[in-house]
Image 1: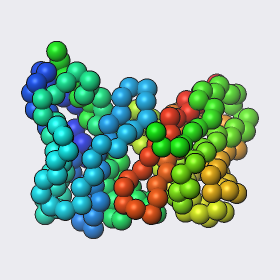
Image 2: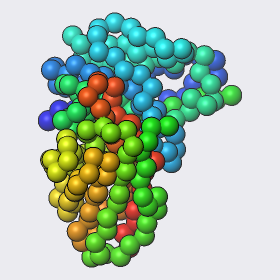
Image 3: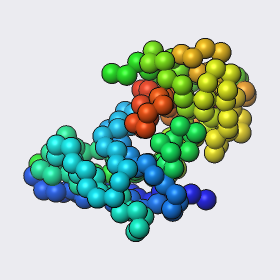
Length: 113
Length: 112
């Protein structure tokens, strides 16, 4: 069974620090990787996507992908209290259009002022 | 915001009654999905649709049915609600491009 694993946390970091969120996946055929942010009581919101090995940066967020090791990570620089949320990793062979986007259970991040 | 709305936002229903949740999109996206989210289980796919009248089962489809008669609407029906179906239900949409899913605001369903 295809799985996506995340540390459930909570991960607590001080304001201004770098938060590092990790995700491993079991399906070696995976090609599309996504990070979603979900505030308590709200719906998941796509914040990053990555398809090639290496780093992808978008503002304070950097996604890192290593297909050989089957892991994806999300770095949040200069963490703010507003970043406090649950972060979901999602993995698919083809972007998920065939209903095969697999979600991890999420890591809860708490940024302390 | 992407044009995706779910209704109702909250519902309390009794065991054994049928319940229909509605997902409506204005993006003309081909693909639509129904997920449930429960503590300890994360997001689990119930059913999805890849076109009008084209649907398929997901991981947790037992006790649920879906219909899609128009591109913009995807209905999820709990045929006879049970307490185990108390959950938060999310609809999601995606287009042909590989940009991931956009989620609706969710429906919190309580079966008593």
